[in-house]
Image (cartoon, rainbow, N blue to C red):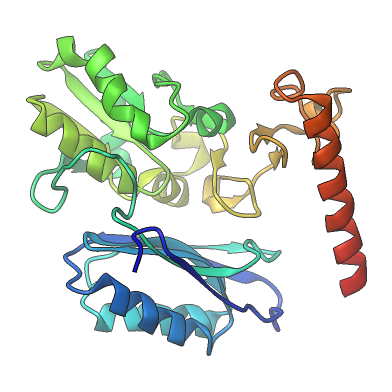
Length: 310
């Protein structure tokens, strides 16, 4: 099976109010990723789940949503498959956060594009309290390993934005900007922790001495850290219908431009540059009138499809 194969399972309407959202990953050798993908597909056809799971030879990664029973079933299935050291976090969404259930087969569960060994070599894990103490120091370089549009929604105070559009660009950022800082303390963070497993492994592989990362990522930090003790500023971009979350992993105020994917604050939606599904202040000058016409057509089709379902 091709390394980027994607299979879909139908998702029925949620019967109860609210959705349990589970974000999970584990680096673990998977002998037959294609077989695991198929067995997962068979399972999710029988339960009410939506979201995405990525399976690769190096492990599993993804976010799924469903009712309590469905989440418990998929969780127990993965534990039985030997994923008993998963980084696993739950939150809630009032609305359905994903349109479909996807089981993807890829060469990496998070794509860095450079071979690293996160099962064998990773940075020092820090819990939220230890993290606050570290990043308050003047001798620490704090790096947000996420993409530019994620950084825009919110980040830790004083964090550097590498201005990457994809995680694949991060190794080049390290090469161009960090090589001279191998003797410094480097602290890195990401949404759920998985990108930092690879980014810290990369830096250690490249000869950096002191590399730290936030265990469980921003989501765990927001779950465990009271707002009055937090060093987080803004909201945390998430890859589901909520757009962003804040302390307590509650849904935030940001919405998403469906033309470019950038998060937008309420006041940015009020600007004349914003047209739902067509443009915002960040992309209005980057698309042609022909493209905008296509976006309008797509948006009208989405609205028509929603009306049919009512």
